[in-house]
Length: 91
Image 1 (cartoon, helix red, strand yellow):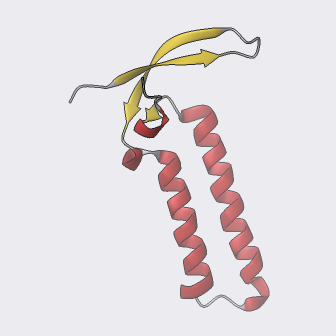
Image 2 (cartoon, rainbow, N blue to C red):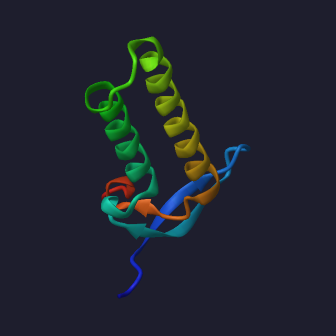
């Protein structure tokens, strides 16, 4: 399977723009999308599906949301080397 790339403009903190080629992948394969989907499912299970005492339910749901956002931030900052099809500007 061939790697599809897109040419996008990358701007550094000094405002200098450079055109670069980045790999394009399906949104279905996105680590960030799967992380957030997992967080949503875990939160719904905690609220509706698991027998968690009401005294700690808020803390459990807060922990799920916090962990989901931290993992998303780490993936986005350190492990994202491609863009999804929706992120590529149309010409």
